[in-house]
Image (cartoon, rainbow, N blue to C red; front, side, top):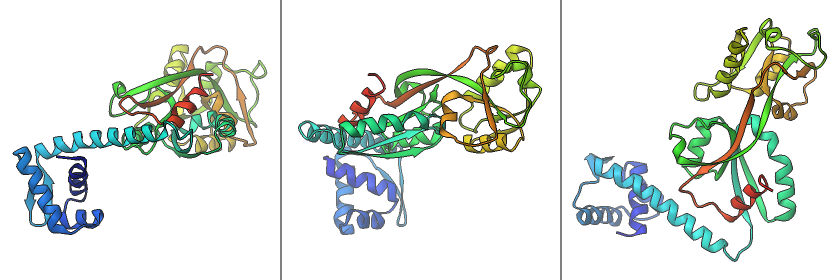
Length: 296
């Protein structure tokens, strides 16, 4: 069995039909059917259950699909690494980021491209669940995210480069009266206001950390809205609907009037930030050099 046959097998598995797979591979159906038969004879197993024209993976086929995906990814990554060895730093670097970490990218991308002008970028924004899928499918190499990285695949799958922690700040409507100390607010004072919480079905870490700090202070919040979008929460604050707590760096991404950002001296909690990537993924030269911009 060779790499070519593994590609054939994965295409058939993805399409669920010999006819559609042959079309995707730009080949005739009979030769593809023969290749599948040769693979099954060599392995001594049935890889697909047949139901008319439809094909469904057997247990043996599911195992081969899992291994073949990994093998082909490693093969392609090795080819890329060898080609890049003497080609310099060039090509496209695909990065993912949660919206609350987007502010960490512009300055580094600007300085990176001054040094490596032949590198272009593709940036995908999403929550932890989406970024985990994008990493797994090799659509992105790196993800800039809040920690811990809440992935259905488990933390052992990822390498992590921790970045400096980000202090939490209170974000209030500009029309609300200030507290007794200018520029500051306590958890007790915050608990007196309607509260907007950043939370999604897949990522709850930041929400839980904020709620724990409220409870630790002895003043649980009055949550009137849970929202998955930072931009929507900031817009709701600007409208005077409620207050929220966000990492300080998030606010540098927004230039919205009618909001105030206050420190919370009584609360000793920060948001952990990091860059994650797949442990079994051979990073491209451009990805490795971009990682160095966060270390230097």
